[in-house]
Length: 56
Image (tube, one colour):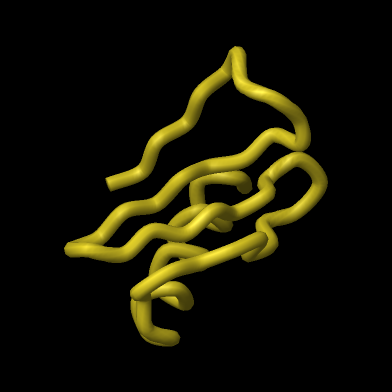
């Protein structure tokens, strides 16, 4: 699941949840992982790729 809150603090970011894990990606200038918990590298890579597709 992807969560975007337009009225939350800057930088603009997206929360991604999968299973018991969560990640936060900054998306203001480019898609960059800010933090993650309990998500493996393949899940983070997939989420980042999806966000980059949406961003273009």
